[in-house]
Image (cartoon, rainbow, N blue to C red; front, side, top):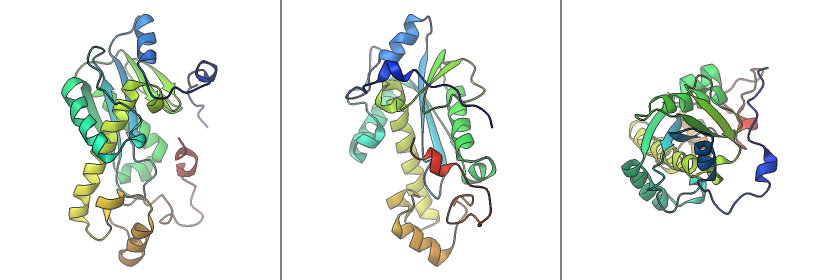
Length: 230
């Protein structure tokens, strides 16, 4: 099994701040890097739809007010911040579809989407802060894994917001194509309503067939259970 990239030293972050800040970005600048990007994904846990990643390079002189882990914001707050981030930062978005997830596994598909998001930035990244325990392979610059990075770094928090809003909008549109599943309400997560629709109508093209309840007993376990906690 391939060893994971060591995360940032937990001793330096024994107590999480009340919210993210720009200190990790400033530290990278002091070490001689420029173009500090944060990257994060949305959609590891759902039964259907893509995993979406975003990469964001913030303007240090124009950081949007209210940046936080997307999960700690309301939908209205996320939508407003999404528009603000697009207006004042360098942003790139990439995704991995359900078939890609099934063929590789959710962890690899997520990291690949993050890599492609960073590669798509109009301003090349000189250093990447990535949420979680892994740095995507194939980056053109150095990267650092930051556990719970969306609660520590403004850049990662911004990426989490962009990824979340983008994916929610994608799943709302998917509901127009596959109206039986209620994607506009649960974005593909395994709610009772979603599971009942699957039982009634069966899976559609957006469902991840390597995930329970679709995976046939005896197949290899996906990494969902281990990764969803991140």
